[in-house]
Length: 395
Image (cartoon, rainbow, N blue to C red; front, side):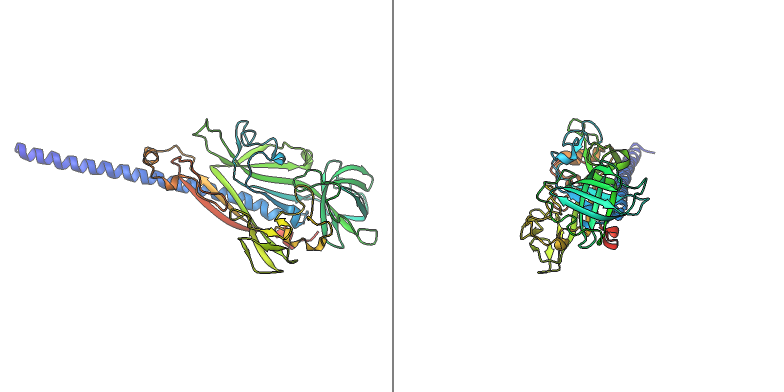
């Protein structure tokens, strides 16, 4: 073999080796990227399954659309009802905080091993109610500090309260707002208005309150990933109204949780909104799916009754039967999942070059697209859930 032939052979082999190396590197990168896609989709699917399970059980033996499910939208971390969780502390870990702009979803269910008790007498003065039930039910009757629902069987008006004292089959109850704070004495309209011995109502005990939230690490820990966390409060382990209950991780790699909710308007109260359809009575609204005020009423912005101040309605003379506009019938839940794996040189290079549309947090419902460029893979997942218990079961 001549020198020229040898040089040509070496050149050909070099080209082949370079091509093979590039091919192996590319295939390796494609494999890693594929693994990340599978990972983020799996994280989102697992998280969604967990939320759906509690959504389908919302209202179990505690059936009331206004009280079984609640969304706390676009949290800032300064909400008193989330305390001690803030934007910078106590969200799963001491120095982690709830992710600003995300939603917190809360589900409530009743006592699983007992039937509701029959109210044979009941009246309220301001925010304090006194009720009597037909008979004592040891082991299932509420105790002091337990949270209960009281249903007026005549009007299907349901109000929530905390037991302050028990004397045999008689209970004294302090009315509560949706955030479990004490309702004001003059704003809780019509609770137990027609209950009497000849017109029985129903007493139901709340067993658990489940809150889903996104906890995120501080900026000083950029390699840590956010996650979906859950806070479960149970009457068997302490009062539902005196946090903190532990906030625990249920799925790594979930960085955004958003929820929109569906309401109906049989009484023609909803008058405007970017996500409302239909006109007049029978209007259906999907709330909190777009920025702004997607669901409004003639009385102001849509607030699920009773409001944070305990008010069922801005008007004290409002018809209690017309609470359809304030009953959440279903949810659309959206999740964004982020890769848990370390960033690759390919991702870092894309980050440096600015070619990273797929590497920023995507927009989700009314949560605008993120601005932080991390070089991480992400995916989004949506699912609709109908609240089966609160639709199929009446209090």
